[in-house]
Amino acid sequence: MESQREEPNRKILDEIDALKAQKSDIEARISSLESQLRDSSLAKQCNGAFPSISTVASNHSRHGLPSDAIYRYSRHLLLPSFGVQGQSNLLKSSVLVVGAGGLGSPALLYLAACGVGRIGIVDHDVVELNNMHRQVIHTEAYIGKSKVESAAAACRSINSTIEIVEYREALRTSNALEIFSKFDLIIDATDNAPSRYMINDCCVVLKKPLVSGAAVGLEGQLTIYNYQGGPCYRCLFPTPPPVTACQRCSDSGVLGVVPGVIGILQALEAIKIASNVGEPLSGRMLLFDALSGRIRVVKIRGQSPQCEACGEKSTFNPEQFREFDYEKFTQTPLSTAPPKLNLIPVESRISCKEYNEKVVNGEAHILVDVRPAHHFDIISLPNSLNIPLSSLEARLSEISAALKEEETRKSVSGARLYTVCRRGNDSQRAVQLLHKLGFTSAKDIVGGLTSWQTEVDPDFPAY
Amino acid sequence: MQLTLEFGGGLELLCDSKKVHHVNVDLSDGEEKLTMKGLLSWAKTNLIKERPEMFMKGDTVRPGVLVLVNDCDWELSGHLDTTLEDKDVVVFISTLHGG
Image (cartoon, rainbow over all chains, first blue to last red):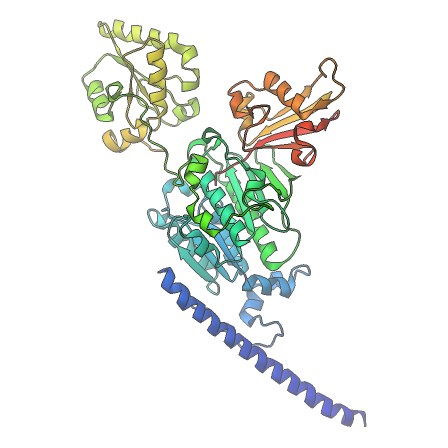
């Protein structure tokens, strides 16, 4: 009797299962068609090529994850605190990474691998050899090519089932709103102050969470702005710092793994927001000190009512954002190219070629290299005397002695005095100082060692 | 009063590249407590060896410096009026922009 009663139930259950399978097939087809539609409209805007979204295999699950996704992300699905829901959220999410450098490289690798459904990459730069030690997404084959092209190819080769959107352009107030509006959250992986203010303000205007990371030397910092009542960048730093306080990796150096650590933590925070799992690092800041091996998480202020961007009385809107001059505000150019200053008259300067001729002709002179000692250790011109700019005034007697010695050696009077540095900026400051201190004929070498390589000796190492 | 002062994000370059300083700060005559305002002027005189303008502007820290008292933003404890106690840890950290 019991088996007879079970019989109709079994049929009903089977039918339910069959219908559910059909339903999930249909849903998968709809989402595949939708992403095709999205692809074609995006492709028009950003000349990049997109991988075809993987066709959804026959689907036996109730959560819409295709079977290849179940296998690919199985270790995520096995995490009780992440699971199917976390992964589904992630697959539906979109993350924009601004900057495919030291921070963006590791962040992108993990975002692509973990299955963020759509990843945007913005950068105008090309891959250089001196990027390779930290910008681990790029390979030697891409040197000289677009960082976005390189990063996108790497992401696709890790995960062909997600969508990568390429923006091979500099982020500006003219394009930021349009680009940002297509993504759920933004990762700031840039390397300069004006970009950081611009990205913050754009996120405030569009109400997007911002995962912000920075790394220089042996230290890193990480926090989330504009999220869950936490502060925005301007709440914390309403006034930009003086230009001299903004160190660049290209000047101060950076241990490759340091931005690696911070970039990966940025990916982690982005994944937590996108999957709606855990406690995002909002209202807190993580400070990483690589040398002492210490990570400190500190409590920071909440959203400031007086904030000019996100405060109660702020009327900051898209129009104002488009008009805002971030370079003027921070006194720093958006491009990271080092400045070429002209501080002294041309009569007080000589070109690398002219200096080379003087050396070849045996002119009596001394060359003072005013770079810091650890720069001088990397490479220097023959017979140059290293007196860093910071100690120039205190070590004038060494210059006098060297000049006298050169005059005795060459049995002449009036040996010349030249200064050199890495790019020709500090050497001008040195000449200004030397003129003031009585060495009125001192001249500097235009463009420094960088120009020496391009104009005189191609084998001289650049750094 | 025993305090630990830490400098980071490049600010350590202003004090002989030393990041952690265990210091003993005495109260000025007639003062009953040490505030952040008092500590800043003490640090400027006793710890900062060069370019003081990279540390302070007016009577507070320059823009771009985050001040933490016992791992907490000083905005939450009273800014310059924050009262310090024995064995407190005060961190001065310059915001980084690189990447």
